[in-house]
Image (cartoon, rainbow, N blue to C red; front, side, top):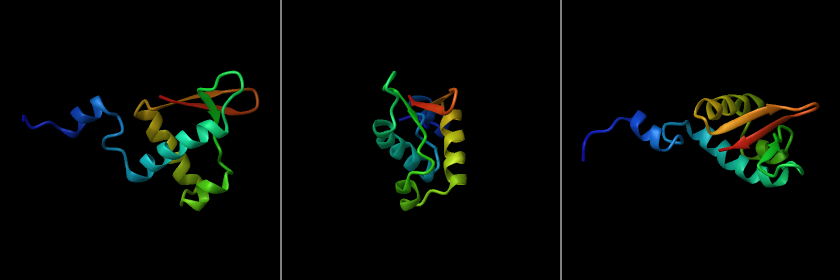
Length: 91
């Protein structure tokens, strides 16, 4: 098997190379997607910054913001600004 770089694997699966906390946030967002989904479009959801479950599993506000930025950069999360909220969509 040829020697492939981490970047090559990341092109196939963008989760490769992400920090462990960002991977945990990604998994948590999968759960929150169902709980906080938009009634107009079920693929979009609000971010549960205040949800006690995130604090219970060890996420601070900084951890959440950093993880969101890493997921956006990895093209795994899309953000839209609404009139009164930010909406997120996992890819």
